Length: 389
Ligand code: ADP
Figure 1 (cartoon, helix red, strand yellow):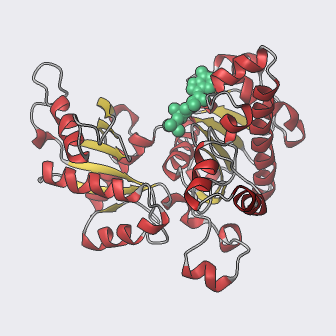
Figure 2: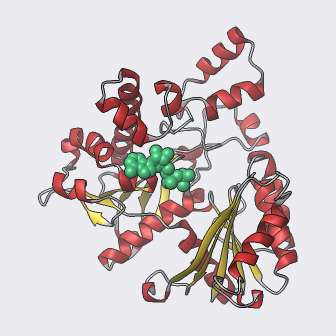
């Protein structure tokens, strides 16, 4: 089945056309037929999401370079939805009840869900014969136990505002779990895993019995690891202190925490790990500090999740930084000998954008690099939902 995977953000639409089957094991049948993105939605040439999707579809059916001849070949659309709240534990075929539940989650993800929904409505108009499936960033983490997702807030207030840890990047963490099991010819439930998605946004997940039991992102994608421009974990009192003394509005503080902090905020140079590694090598102390904080926080979470899981079979690195930065992986792993983590440095250096085991032969806890592929999992979920539903 040919599935259009759509990821609609505030100003961009990313898309892939994937031919796939429902089972991850059926690797040979996957084919990515096309990928692309339409940026700068809102500017004159692309006034809205509908026009963006129209452009995407035009490129797919381009007589010279298009991957398909006619739009009818697209039988299904898999939509990346950011927030499914407590409604969705897995991917679902979109119907009226599902739409209502996604709308109910808009207050939880005001910057994301509305664009995801706009993309859905536009693609339904443009592809009226296709069937549509929603795949949620939060769904995989709905298996967190209450002790992992509950914040230490007054119960009634937390309940009223649905304040709890939801976790995000679930599709990526689930892909890494499934791929690890596939590589080993085993069931996903057979492994205790610590997965590290280190991209622009960064998160870690503890996985046991095929389920997410803890994750570092929380009520929003601000908690946990240090990220490109986000603080990650911070004492809430520091936020109050800044707001009080600097007389910052909610909006200003929100931007400060999400867009001006993290690697960028500490270094004052860049949110890009490549730039910071160069600067650090050249002796820039703040670039060095930013990277130290970044790696230290990952180490702490590995230790925490090792304790949560009672040991781990493997630590998996993925996404832009995890897949491409041996220096970061070494800085994270080298001090973790006590947890049975030991890298083979030649393998670590070689693993740039490649899937491989980078641990030393004698290491008790394996360390893997696995390139993530959220779009493929969205496509497979879409086919699976449609074949059972
Ligand atoms: P997103 O979360 O937007 O999908 P990616 O997973 O593509 O992002 O990760 C983007 C980040 O990956 C960049 O900001 C950069 O810091 C990092 N990155 C990409 N390539 C490399 C590299 N070769 N070395 C170190 N970091 C890299």
